[in-house]
Image (tube, rainbow, N blue to C red; front, side, top):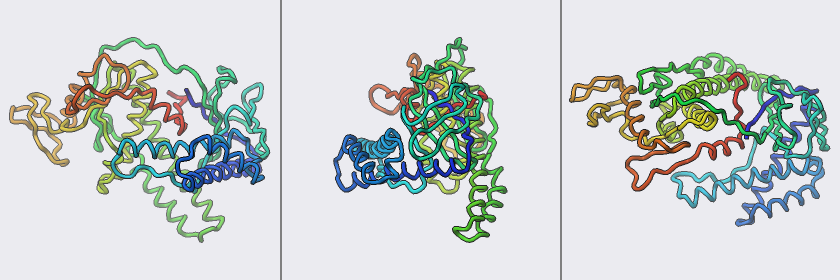
Length: 403
């Protein structure tokens, strides 16, 4: 599955219609969550029946395409299923109890409710919301794919406008020649990553760089009264700055991950739990700004695309263990040099990257994303990156056309 995204160009009345469709989608989803709360134990089929009841009861729901209503029900049920799954697995902490949506930003259609023009440069939404024909602006070419390959169409509202995303069933794998190289990566805050060869990638720190602009826009928002038109305009400009920073971080992660994957047959990295790491309030901003999760996500994506092996290892003792003799040398975060009693001296991140690669080499011969824990009993467990990408399809993460 691949996702292609285009900028949607239309009239103001069409944008208003899109907003109405998004609000209707949010209404259906929240109704499904409420129905589940009041009738614990209901399944997906019961929620589909609820969709029919809502379409019969509310005219604005009936105006939305039936497949879009079903997609909203599926969104609600996915959050319910995830909650049950976390409870069965005894996930520590919060289990992700389904919540009501307050600011939904997208509406999703299946194979009906829309039609493409012959040139594939316009899309027309045929339900009764009044969206009509939208022009598609982008570098992708939909003529390479059959209409039967387009499984979903999603309208997304962002701070800088509206977008149309196409979920296409297509093979995205690329045949490449083996390089005979392996590499271990240790991500950090000072440097974006340090590899087992001693090379370091600088950390761009997009959020830190854009903080001055953010503070200026936040002051502009606080100047105006709540609910006023000027305040809404100021909030939109603030959102554009946040959107630019997030796009910079995402594009940087894509570019670096692609270069790393194409240059090596095996890439090892730490299986970090970023959600737990950001609980440290002193480092939370820097960790989020580094974009470790985005980097790992794109490593796994390009690993599947180019047929490379990606291995996630247990990060325990990778920093403190000596890569030369194996002794454990405890050190604080401020200590940037690894000094061992055996006389081995090296940068701490470089030392950690070597340890990560050594741990990963025990899983060679297995294609996919492998989470390796040397302290676990029995065989190592594996998670194929293809399964992870199926979850990413739900959030519509698309590859940049410039890569």
